[in-house]
Length: 527
Image (tube, rainbow, N blue to C red; front, top):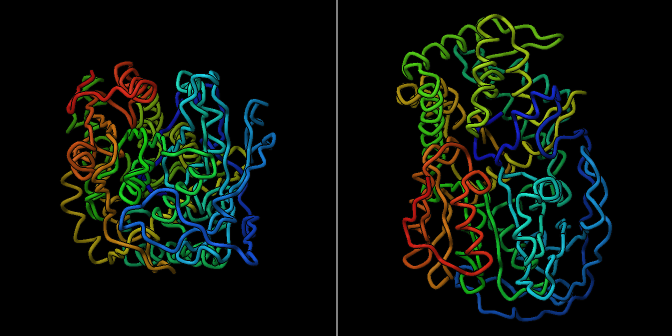
């Protein structure tokens, strides 16, 4: 479990009130076998030249015509591993992309797409691609579920979702089976207090990576955000668009920033919402989230009339008690780590705060079902004990991106500072710096991503002041990194992870940009 940069959590309150215990978007069965991925080696492709000049950072061998000239076979979509089959207005296809972009005439992997064509054919602007974050969120599964929110955009754009490489139907990474995942959740202490707990924690994290290497060895070294950004430019060409129009949320802002850096001349209308700080390293991200989640928790506690300091200490006491004595819930246990996950998920949206009040009151009275249910939602665990593989993809992408491998000693040294920032989330997020990529079998690409995009069209960068997972300061940094005249900061004074669809002002501003090309003034404030 990690409360890293996750996708926007949708309708948590409705989910729990309805008594459903399935995981979040994309939850489904996980098997011990590798994902069903076809890796194809071409025969004699002929090279071609890209139709637009890329930035110097994008220079690689030209893609062959066998890739750039693909014709997509759009078919009725199959049902996802969980949930209903998309309606007939949705069509699915797969683009072949290079396994290794440095060897574009070599092996290929599938890149899954889903599309709903624009309602107004005469007024159509082009394709609008969505990434809902994670990393690891399946756009093929999520977009049809969330499409009503984007109905206005869907009048003039083909709405296009995709599974990034290493996710779902795009050579999805698989690292462990359901039983292994459940055993880890139940037995591994995420804030180890003894040498034995520390050893078990690091052993489990190492085993996770080893499982990825066994089950997904071919694709694992090639799951970087840079590679997916290059995939997007190939998809743009195959879809017939001169420029990329893109809506990225959470981790999707990092992917969008990487694309803009690599291909500034191909940037169309891009919007980033719930923005990742491109200047932060592993420790920096953990520090930001410690501050962000505590800030959101403080705002929640103030809304209930409770002093934030006293309320945080009350919750910290509950977590310490659960660390010593987990609560029994049927044949399972609510551990400290699962309780922390359940608390975190409610902070993704202000509408979930009443549920947090209920969950905490229940747990303090010895009833752990509500917090456990919330944790299952976040961890994509369904009522039958099946997990989705989003967390597998999330870690594979994150660890392929980051070259940092903090040690346990470094993590322990951070604990006093992080606990000072948050008595609730601090220790966990300090330990997470070392556990997340412990002994990862693949070297990471870089320390921090590059997002500078000189000469690109304006990019809207939307930050929410109470965002727990991607704190507001990240939006300020992204707008600055994109460059003068490119990054356009829009501030949403409010709570939650992501503003579009919850802030009418932000929604109007984003719609005006996508539909009319109206660029708001830098520093525009909503709320």
